[in-house]
Image (cartoon, rainbow, N blue to C red; front, side, top):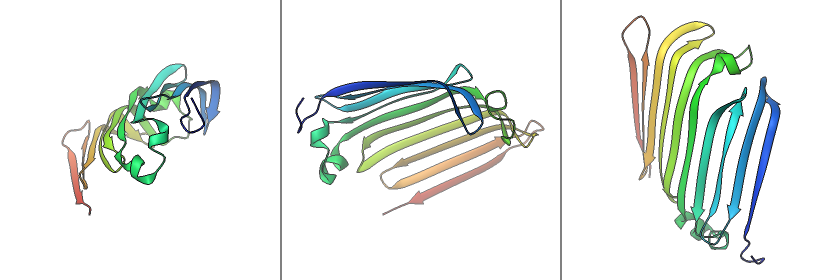
Length: 169
């Protein structure tokens, strides 16, 4: 590439890391500045197990998105997937939240008009050792409208549901 149009690729790896009581953290990330897009992807491991995968891109090339107007119109694509992870087994002993969690965050559109969805699910959710059951959170944002729905289904039966919808200018 050139100074006005750089082209490069790089990777970074982490092994046997620790953070906030979590041990044996690992990860791999790749970043690319190419003709068509700026992109990144990678994964995170916790206690030797893959916990998170991510990928994303912003098109067109870096030199065309360096102005505020260019950035607002750039094509955005991103995804983060949380694979089943048992917090009680992989996290520090003093974490109040327990259970097995999964999730997916996806974004598309442009930075000026993003469309985002989120799904988080938990099985065997417990807070401070008290079992709560199954939890599910769905949320979305598009065209200045945000919405969310939460459901908690205790093992003893019944369900607690909540919804939220917000319009923004």
